[in-house]
Length: 262
Image (cartoon, rainbow, N blue to C red; front, side):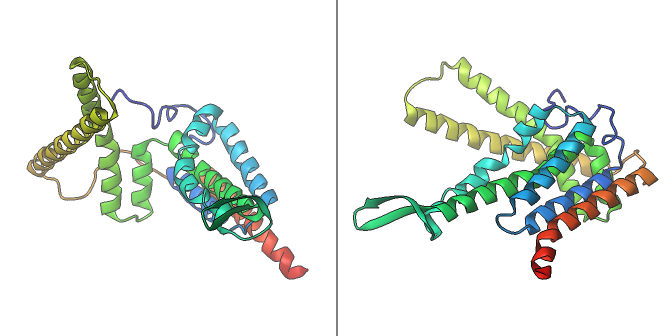
């Protein structure tokens, strides 16, 4: 495998890298759940979670730019929903215009809600970016098995990771073949060729999958994975997990507790 865009920093040595995969996965899961639980407009809570993630990132010594690039992947998907919120939420109108008999207005409350959704989505994905950047896939899969994750899900994740690189190679060969044929023309021709390439890539991937599955059956594949890596929870792993989980839960519950007290 010559592609390292998924886990190029997993071989580094840091406090976070040395933690057990189970401790990191459960901590990331609880942090994400706590961020999702936070109510609308609790900006100081988001700031606290961002500071906590920044501290963990500093301990891991993973480059900041890498984490920002990886975490930014969530924005296009969330933006498709958030872009409509300023126009469908009622409130103080900031900007309005007419389209025929329709009046479309952008409200301040809608903009704040859109910013809230984007901020929450970004902070929620940061723990898992750090998890994948500091944990090898084999250790992560072994940890998921130890956590009694359904075997079919673990195997699907392992196959997806393994053969993603093969599909990438197939796509690169198709691009080289396209360029060697002096690919040009207008946008219509571009769309047609891209459609042909997508179809060809799907067929090649499907055929490769059938061949791989047949080879696995001949080698005694019974639906379960095999790994030589041994994992063991240490005191440092349990301590890290408890501290991160308790801190995240307390910070997420503080606004609710204060409202009840008031």
